[in-house]
Amino acid sequence: MKYSEFAYIHTIGCQMNVYDSEKLMAILSSLGYEKTDDIHKADMVVCNTCSIRHKAQEKAFSFLGRLTKLKKTKPELIGVMAGCVAQQEGEKAFERIPHLDIVLGTRAFSRFARHIEAVKSGRQKVTDTADSSVIYEVMPETLGFDENQISRFVTIMQGCENFCTYCVVPYVRGTERSREPENIIEEITAMAASGVKEVTLLGQNVNSYGKKEGKISFPRLLEKINQIQGIQRIRFATSHPKDLSMDLICAIRDMDKVCNHLHLPVQSGSNAILKKMNRGYTRETYLKRIIDLKTQCPDIGLSTDMIVGFPSETRQDFEDTMNLLGEIEYDSIFAFAYSDRSSAPAAKFSDQIDEEIKRKRLNELLERQDYYSRKNNEKLTGKTVDVLVEGASAKKRDGFEAENKNIKQMSGRTQSNKIVHFPSENASIGDIIKIKIENAYLHSLWGTPAEIGEK
Image (cartoon, rainbow, N blue to C red; front, side):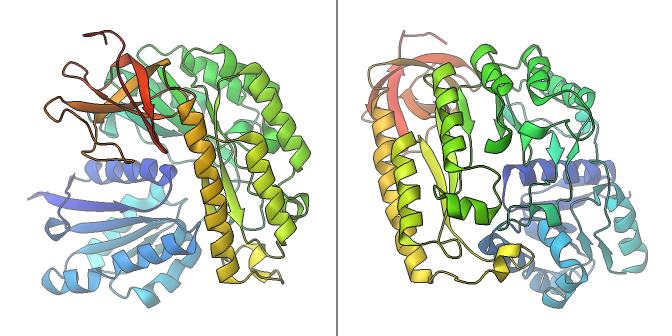
């Protein structure tokens, strides 16, 4: 390459997309591209997209719409749509974004370099949404680890075979495929050597890791990662309630590096709606798993996903969800008003709920959850917790503003995934320090180092 070429990557959506964007950048680096944060400097613009919700999909088209203006000043610019929207739309993406050059599906990463060459040599447009039975692997050393990035994502599997009626994942990510455990261990070991302290293992359903291919179980994989020197915390998402085993619950309880936190999406508290969603469990079986969790791990932090306004949801169905919230008292929730995804079966369901009703129910749910979030945070007041330092605090966050602005303000997370702000002149990113909690807020905690100078 006679001169440096620059790539700008814009990521929309989930944690898995963040990880996939790192893979795309590793491929581009092998071709001689350098990463840039200035889109006007870029010779290639990549948008790694998400189609789980309509808003995320429209964000992708809005961002890529900027290519029209950019290409007027730089005709040789290569525009790439990657990820779930690319997989879903295929060649139709060119109708909305005429100046797009490559549409790269979720299973086409191994062919990305070839498509770039095809575009450069003949300026032809390329669409690749072909299937692949394996997850594309890149060498750990090519991923590029930032020395200040002490927490990283690692995809351990892709795809899903649960076919929830509201979800497009099986259609855009394909069927379940688990990475080889040796490759996962090698990657995390390389991360640990670069200074990474915490890894979050990703998959549409991590509980079913390895089952389809006859690999080691997910709890066994956790055991192997737990032995890697340098890694101090292990998180994972997402777990499916119907596959949550006692072995995994015991792994959370017994393995010192596995964090005392679980994200367990329930989606609804109504058995009628759960059945219509094809979730594979009932309200009663879900609650039994929560009881098992809290029995074995009394202080576990719990979070969940909830959908309100699913087709045919009655007021009683919604009340069942609200009551479930009160029975479990989650630390936090991610709640959404149902929206149709064209390739998901629920888009064809009758008895769609009025948008205004959905909005009111969502607000009602979030208001109730605020009470439990604050209540759970207040339980930690006066206690001392271990915090993994992530960096400097925002000047003002969650209603908190430091009293002494002359002291450096830092923030980090507890094992149960609670954000903690604290003053410190000595703490560095990656330290685990003991913090005594003095104040609780809706989304975070405030405390001071338990012992001056302690890390």
